[in-house]
Image 1 (cartoon, rainbow, N blue to C red):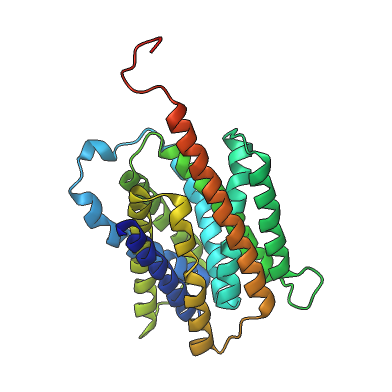
Image 2 (cartoon, rainbow, N blue to C red; image 1 turned 60 degrees about the vertical axis):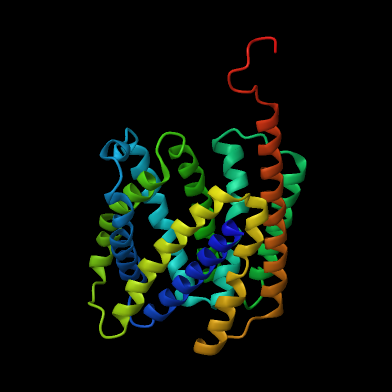
Length: 295
Protein backbone atom coordinates (compact mmCIF):
# COMPACT_ATOMS: atom_id res chain seq x y z
CA UNK A 1 0.00 0.00 0.00
CA UNK A 2 2.89 2.38 0.74
CA UNK A 3 4.40 1.67 -2.68
CA UNK A 4 1.04 2.30 -4.35
CA UNK A 5 0.68 5.54 -2.41
CA UNK A 6 4.13 6.72 -3.49
CA UNK A 7 3.39 5.85 -7.13
CA UNK A 8 0.04 7.66 -7.06
CA UNK A 9 1.68 10.73 -5.52
CA UNK A 10 4.42 10.55 -8.15
CA UNK A 11 1.86 10.31 -10.93
CA UNK A 12 -0.02 13.35 -9.63
CA UNK A 13 3.25 15.29 -9.29
CA UNK A 14 4.26 14.58 -12.89
CA UNK A 15 0.76 15.49 -14.06
CA UNK A 16 0.86 18.82 -12.22
CA UNK A 17 4.35 19.44 -13.64
CA UNK A 18 2.97 18.98 -17.17
CA UNK A 19 0.17 21.44 -16.40
CA UNK A 20 2.59 24.06 -15.02
CA UNK A 21 4.79 23.66 -18.12
CA UNK A 22 1.76 24.23 -20.34
CA UNK A 23 0.79 27.34 -18.36
CA UNK A 24 4.36 28.69 -18.46
CA UNK A 25 4.58 28.11 -22.22
CA UNK A 26 1.89 30.73 -22.77
CA UNK A 27 4.43 33.47 -22.03
CA UNK A 28 7.87 31.81 -22.03
CA UNK A 29 9.93 29.92 -24.59
CA UNK A 30 10.44 26.17 -24.12
CA UNK A 31 14.19 26.68 -23.63
CA UNK A 32 13.62 29.01 -20.68
CA UNK A 33 11.05 26.72 -19.09
CA UNK A 34 13.52 23.82 -19.25
CA UNK A 35 16.23 25.94 -17.60
CA UNK A 36 14.01 27.13 -14.74
CA UNK A 37 12.62 23.62 -14.27
CA UNK A 38 16.19 22.34 -13.81
CA UNK A 39 17.32 25.26 -11.65
CA UNK A 40 14.46 24.96 -9.19
CA UNK A 41 14.68 21.18 -9.42
CA UNK A 42 18.29 21.38 -8.27
CA UNK A 43 17.32 23.61 -5.36
CA UNK A 44 14.59 21.13 -4.43
CA UNK A 45 16.95 18.14 -4.48
CA UNK A 46 19.78 19.74 -2.47
CA UNK A 47 18.15 19.04 0.95
CA UNK A 48 18.11 15.34 0.04
CA UNK A 49 21.88 15.17 -0.43
CA UNK A 50 23.11 17.60 2.24
CA UNK A 51 23.11 14.90 4.90
CA UNK A 52 24.75 12.26 2.73
CA UNK A 53 28.30 11.00 3.22
CA UNK A 54 30.49 13.07 0.86
CA UNK A 55 32.28 9.88 -0.21
CA UNK A 56 29.02 8.51 -1.61
CA UNK A 57 28.69 11.55 -3.87
CA UNK A 58 31.98 10.91 -5.65
CA UNK A 59 31.86 9.29 -9.04
CA UNK A 60 34.23 7.97 -11.69
CA UNK A 61 31.61 8.25 -14.44
CA UNK A 62 31.63 11.96 -15.33
CA UNK A 63 31.99 11.37 -19.11
CA UNK A 64 28.98 9.04 -19.02
CA UNK A 65 27.00 11.59 -17.00
CA UNK A 66 27.81 14.24 -19.62
CA UNK A 67 26.50 12.06 -22.47
CA UNK A 68 23.43 10.97 -20.48
CA UNK A 69 22.57 14.57 -19.58
CA UNK A 70 23.12 15.88 -23.13
CA UNK A 71 20.65 13.30 -24.47
CA UNK A 72 18.35 14.04 -21.54
CA UNK A 73 18.29 17.75 -22.38
CA UNK A 74 17.28 16.88 -25.94
CA UNK A 75 14.47 14.71 -24.61
CA UNK A 76 13.38 17.39 -22.16
CA UNK A 77 13.28 20.18 -24.76
CA UNK A 78 11.31 18.02 -27.19
CA UNK A 79 8.93 16.84 -24.48
CA UNK A 80 8.35 20.35 -23.11
CA UNK A 81 7.72 21.67 -26.61
CA UNK A 82 5.14 18.92 -27.16
CA UNK A 83 3.39 19.76 -23.87
CA UNK A 84 3.31 23.43 -24.81
CA UNK A 85 2.06 23.02 -28.40
CA UNK A 86 0.06 19.77 -28.58
CA UNK A 87 -3.14 18.93 -26.71
CA UNK A 88 -2.03 17.84 -23.25
CA UNK A 89 -3.64 14.40 -23.46
CA UNK A 90 -1.98 13.68 -26.82
CA UNK A 91 1.46 14.80 -25.62
CA UNK A 92 1.24 12.65 -22.47
CA UNK A 93 -0.16 9.67 -24.39
CA UNK A 94 2.80 9.70 -26.77
CA UNK A 95 5.23 10.00 -23.84
CA UNK A 96 3.88 6.65 -22.61
CA UNK A 97 5.60 5.00 -25.57
CA UNK A 98 8.97 5.41 -23.79
CA UNK A 99 8.97 1.85 -22.30
CA UNK A 100 8.56 0.49 -25.83
CA UNK A 101 11.76 2.26 -26.88
CA UNK A 102 13.47 1.21 -23.63
CA UNK A 103 12.91 -2.43 -24.57
CA UNK A 104 14.46 -1.85 -27.99
CA UNK A 105 17.39 0.09 -26.52
CA UNK A 106 18.01 -2.64 -23.92
CA UNK A 107 18.35 -5.19 -26.70
CA UNK A 108 20.63 -2.94 -28.77
CA UNK A 109 22.87 -1.37 -26.11
CA UNK A 110 22.75 -3.75 -23.13
CA UNK A 111 22.56 -7.00 -25.07
CA UNK A 112 19.44 -8.07 -23.16
CA UNK A 113 17.72 -11.11 -24.59
CA UNK A 114 14.19 -9.99 -25.48
CA UNK A 115 11.88 -12.91 -26.20
CA UNK A 116 8.97 -13.10 -28.59
CA UNK A 117 6.30 -12.03 -26.11
CA UNK A 118 7.97 -8.75 -25.31
CA UNK A 119 8.67 -8.08 -29.00
CA UNK A 120 4.96 -8.67 -29.61
CA UNK A 121 4.17 -6.10 -26.90
CA UNK A 122 6.58 -3.65 -28.57
CA UNK A 123 4.78 -4.09 -31.90
CA UNK A 124 1.41 -3.57 -30.20
CA UNK A 125 2.80 -0.41 -28.58
CA UNK A 126 3.81 0.88 -32.01
CA UNK A 127 0.30 0.19 -33.25
CA UNK A 128 -0.99 2.40 -30.43
CA UNK A 129 1.43 5.16 -31.48
CA UNK A 130 0.21 4.94 -35.07
CA UNK A 131 -3.41 5.14 -33.91
CA UNK A 132 -2.64 8.43 -32.13
CA UNK A 133 -0.48 10.11 -34.79
CA UNK A 134 -2.33 8.62 -37.81
CA UNK A 135 0.21 9.33 -40.58
CA UNK A 136 -1.43 10.82 -43.65
CA UNK A 137 -4.36 12.31 -41.73
CA UNK A 138 -4.99 15.97 -41.00
CA UNK A 139 -4.01 15.38 -37.34
CA UNK A 140 -0.51 14.21 -38.30
CA UNK A 141 1.85 17.12 -37.63
CA UNK A 142 5.51 17.81 -37.00
CA UNK A 143 4.56 18.25 -33.36
CA UNK A 144 3.65 14.59 -33.00
CA UNK A 145 7.07 13.63 -34.37
CA UNK A 146 8.74 15.90 -31.81
CA UNK A 147 6.75 14.19 -29.04
CA UNK A 148 7.91 10.80 -30.34
CA UNK A 149 11.51 12.05 -30.50
CA UNK A 150 11.23 12.93 -26.80
CA UNK A 151 10.05 9.37 -26.06
CA UNK A 152 12.89 7.80 -28.07
CA UNK A 153 15.55 9.93 -26.35
CA UNK A 154 13.95 9.25 -22.97
CA UNK A 155 14.22 5.52 -23.64
CA UNK A 156 17.95 5.88 -24.32
CA UNK A 157 18.35 7.92 -21.13
CA UNK A 158 16.61 5.18 -19.12
CA UNK A 159 19.18 2.67 -20.33
CA UNK A 160 22.02 5.01 -19.40
CA UNK A 161 20.58 5.50 -15.91
CA UNK A 162 20.48 1.74 -15.54
CA UNK A 163 24.17 1.61 -16.44
CA UNK A 164 25.04 4.42 -14.02
CA UNK A 165 23.07 2.81 -11.19
CA UNK A 166 25.32 -0.25 -11.30
CA UNK A 167 28.02 1.89 -9.66
CA UNK A 168 26.44 5.04 -8.17
CA UNK A 169 23.50 5.34 -5.72
CA UNK A 170 20.25 6.94 -6.84
CA UNK A 171 20.74 10.28 -5.04
CA UNK A 172 24.19 10.66 -6.60
CA UNK A 173 22.71 10.12 -10.06
CA UNK A 174 19.98 12.69 -9.43
CA UNK A 175 22.43 15.28 -8.09
CA UNK A 176 24.92 15.00 -10.96
CA UNK A 177 22.08 15.02 -13.46
CA UNK A 178 20.88 18.39 -12.21
CA UNK A 179 24.42 19.77 -11.91
CA UNK A 180 24.89 19.06 -15.62
CA UNK A 181 21.36 19.97 -16.67
CA UNK A 182 21.38 23.52 -15.27
CA UNK A 183 24.29 24.86 -17.39
CA UNK A 184 23.31 22.72 -20.38
CA UNK A 185 19.79 24.15 -20.42
CA UNK A 186 21.01 27.69 -19.71
CA UNK A 187 22.99 27.83 -22.96
CA UNK A 188 19.98 27.61 -25.34
CA UNK A 189 17.80 29.65 -22.95
CA UNK A 190 20.13 32.65 -23.29
CA UNK A 191 19.27 32.89 -27.01
CA UNK A 192 15.60 33.55 -26.24
CA UNK A 193 15.93 35.02 -22.77
CA UNK A 194 13.06 36.97 -21.29
CA UNK A 195 12.52 37.26 -17.57
CA UNK A 196 9.29 35.69 -16.30
CA UNK A 197 6.68 38.14 -15.05
CA UNK A 198 3.98 37.81 -12.44
CA UNK A 199 2.36 34.41 -12.14
CA UNK A 200 4.79 32.89 -14.66
CA UNK A 201 7.27 32.64 -11.78
CA UNK A 202 4.81 30.36 -9.97
CA UNK A 203 4.56 28.07 -12.99
CA UNK A 204 8.33 27.66 -13.52
CA UNK A 205 8.99 27.17 -9.80
CA UNK A 206 6.16 24.65 -9.67
CA UNK A 207 7.56 22.73 -12.63
CA UNK A 208 10.88 22.29 -10.82
CA UNK A 209 9.37 21.32 -7.48
CA UNK A 210 6.73 18.94 -8.83
CA UNK A 211 9.15 17.40 -11.34
CA UNK A 212 11.70 16.64 -8.62
CA UNK A 213 8.99 15.40 -6.25
CA UNK A 214 7.73 13.06 -8.96
CA UNK A 215 11.20 11.61 -9.50
CA UNK A 216 11.85 11.08 -5.79
CA UNK A 217 8.43 9.53 -5.12
CA UNK A 218 8.77 7.28 -8.18
CA UNK A 219 12.14 6.01 -6.90
CA UNK A 220 10.71 5.25 -3.46
CA UNK A 221 7.73 3.46 -5.00
CA UNK A 222 9.94 1.15 -7.06
CA UNK A 223 12.08 0.39 -4.01
CA UNK A 224 9.01 -0.85 -2.12
CA UNK A 225 6.96 -2.53 -4.85
CA UNK A 226 7.17 -4.32 -8.18
CA UNK A 227 7.12 -2.47 -11.47
CA UNK A 228 4.40 -4.69 -12.92
CA UNK A 229 2.05 -3.91 -10.04
CA UNK A 230 2.80 -0.18 -9.92
CA UNK A 231 2.92 0.71 -13.63
CA UNK A 232 -0.89 0.78 -14.11
CA UNK A 233 -1.14 3.45 -11.39
CA UNK A 234 1.02 5.81 -13.46
CA UNK A 235 -1.65 5.76 -16.17
CA UNK A 236 -3.83 7.95 -13.93
CA UNK A 237 -1.78 10.88 -15.23
CA UNK A 238 -3.69 10.79 -18.51
CA UNK A 239 -7.21 11.57 -17.18
CA UNK A 240 -5.66 14.19 -14.89
CA UNK A 241 -4.03 16.16 -17.72
CA UNK A 242 -6.98 15.52 -20.07
CA UNK A 243 -9.33 17.08 -17.51
CA UNK A 244 -6.96 20.04 -17.04
CA UNK A 245 -6.72 20.49 -20.81
CA UNK A 246 -10.52 20.53 -21.08
CA UNK A 247 -11.12 22.88 -18.14
CA UNK A 248 -8.31 25.41 -18.61
CA UNK A 249 -7.34 25.24 -22.27
CA UNK A 250 -10.59 24.25 -23.96
CA UNK A 251 -9.09 21.06 -25.41
CA UNK A 252 -11.16 18.07 -26.40
CA UNK A 253 -9.64 14.61 -26.49
CA UNK A 254 -10.33 12.71 -29.71
CA UNK A 255 -11.45 9.10 -29.57
CA UNK A 256 -8.31 7.99 -31.43
CA UNK A 257 -6.11 9.45 -28.69
CA UNK A 258 -7.96 7.42 -26.05
CA UNK A 259 -7.84 4.25 -28.15
CA UNK A 260 -4.15 4.67 -28.96
CA UNK A 261 -3.31 5.48 -25.35
CA UNK A 262 -5.15 2.37 -24.15
CA UNK A 263 -3.18 0.21 -26.60
CA UNK A 264 0.15 1.76 -25.55
CA UNK A 265 -0.64 1.43 -21.85
CA UNK A 266 -1.65 -2.21 -22.28
CA UNK A 267 1.63 -2.94 -24.05
CA UNK A 268 3.56 -1.14 -21.29
CA UNK A 269 1.77 -3.09 -18.57
CA UNK A 270 2.65 -6.38 -20.25
CA UNK A 271 6.29 -5.37 -20.76
CA UNK A 272 6.54 -4.42 -17.06
CA UNK A 273 4.90 -7.71 -16.08
CA UNK A 274 7.33 -9.77 -18.18
CA UNK A 275 10.37 -7.88 -16.87
CA UNK A 276 9.28 -8.42 -13.26
CA UNK A 277 8.61 -12.11 -13.94
CA UNK A 278 12.02 -12.60 -15.56
CA UNK A 279 13.75 -10.74 -12.72
CA UNK A 280 12.13 -12.98 -10.11
CA UNK A 281 13.03 -16.05 -12.13
CA UNK A 282 16.65 -14.93 -12.45
CA UNK A 283 16.82 -14.24 -8.70
CA UNK A 284 15.39 -17.66 -7.83
CA UNK A 285 17.83 -19.41 -10.15
CA UNK A 286 20.87 -17.53 -8.83
CA UNK A 287 23.01 -19.48 -6.29
CA UNK A 288 22.23 -18.47 -2.74
CA UNK A 289 24.81 -16.26 -1.06
CA UNK A 290 27.26 -18.25 0.98
CA UNK A 291 26.35 -21.58 -0.61
CA UNK A 292 29.23 -23.98 -1.02
CA UNK A 293 30.13 -25.54 -4.36
CA UNK A 294 28.03 -28.58 -4.99
CA UNK A 295 25.24 -27.57 -2.62
